[in-house]
Length: 189
Image (cartoon, rainbow, N blue to C red; front, top):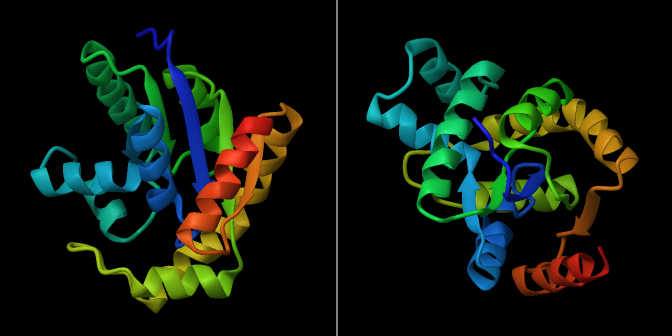
């Protein structure tokens, strides 16, 4: 299925780095459709649209199989294209270097990859302070997801830096200052 004629922004960052908050602001202000991969997967899991293995992986905060992820994203994006939405901001992908080629082959390469970066202590504080229904965001979950991010992120960063697509944004400040840095970075890019 052709995903041509899409404007794609991928957003990566540690849990609590501000991906959802800043992505929502950018989408709202600049006409992008925001897809939170985590929210999408949790919604599909609750609706019974996923197989048991995938549901279990989501419940245990593990990566799902790439063929399942690409199928879900391809279907979601095709529906959005039919609705006339061609400017997409996708937060939460890729989560490993092994996901890059299958994702890009399926939905297309990004125009830019935003890396939201803040110290672990700030990310942890934000993560633990959020109260999202249906999510078990506690210290154990944060530690697992943060360590996974640290272990898997460097290869992703190096890949997109090599292609000149990575834009690293310091999100250690409050929402307003982080958003201002994001907009400034995008203007330069």
